[in-house]
Length: 414
Ligand SMILES: [Zn+2]
Image (cartoon, rainbow, N blue to C red; front, side, top):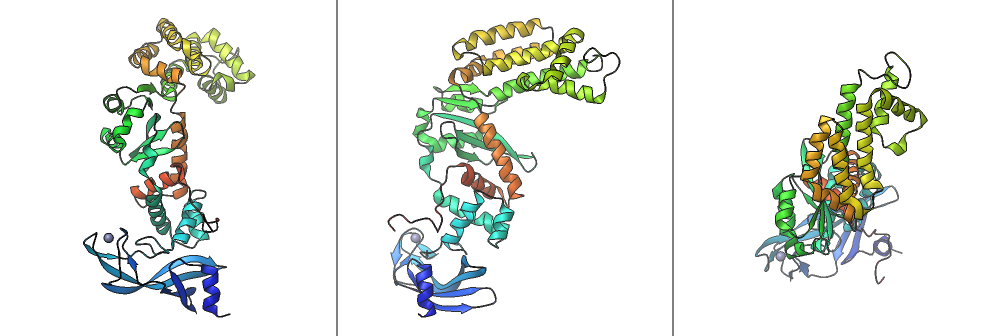
């Protein structure tokens, strides 16, 4: 069998024959000959007339440990639809790519599952190449249909560049997918999401927001019929701040447990954990500390108890009783004589409807918190992104519900 025939059988390239095979220092270079004179513009327009040509190489999947490159003439065409000279689209690679589609699909599939360093080492290509490839593959897969059938959504911000810059993330509560990445934390970034949604905004029934949300007024304006829910995570966060400030005010004075004298550092830490952690995570020693606080530092104990009662609001209260329970909690908190709780009650009453709605509809931003955690992981795994587009593309790739077909997967109809 001739070597070109052998490579033809192995490669099965669309639209080209293997013409020549050379073993070079960089790897195997496979020269290709087209099966047809018909050339295709990236826009889909076809022609037989050529403007000019150049020789180009694409990296393809390795043979063993050998790098493989495809080489062919690429033509520029004077496109009758784009009305300008463009480089034709070859059947085995995406426009402007220097890697074949098979190679790029493999990179994208791996990037969904492992860190960029591992991908770049395994496939022997640079981080920048991985970023470029992911951006191209995502651009091909991302589809406006993802914005169909959005009924319950959540919006949150995520920081990048060590907390100095922010993205706006919109997720679908029902599928858990990220459907929108706004390249900023602003009302404008959120408005752009609704602009893209167009008439489909009418389908949105509920939206979850975080506490100090700059997104609230946009939501009220663009989806006036949707119920706005305030994320429990943030409300509990407010209560934890009260506990924390009470702890700091009381800590220098309280004895821990029944022991007299100044508590040791370790005991302080343990007490701090006891008041901060959820009640269900405490052991006997923590209970002893709390009992001691109840006797000797009632105010801190009460701050802890009110925080736990607010957590119960999300954990065990029947949604039908949500509003009554929250009202009772506010009354009790006002009686506590802890000034920070008075401020908190004001805040809760201001957002009362949104807080109760979250319990009634069983919605929280926990899904978005989960997404945020994954995005932080993507950032860590990526060790920095060339630019915002690359980070955005990686977020869509990993969290946007994109399915990549591997070159080794059975082809439909094959
Ligand atoms: Zn065109």
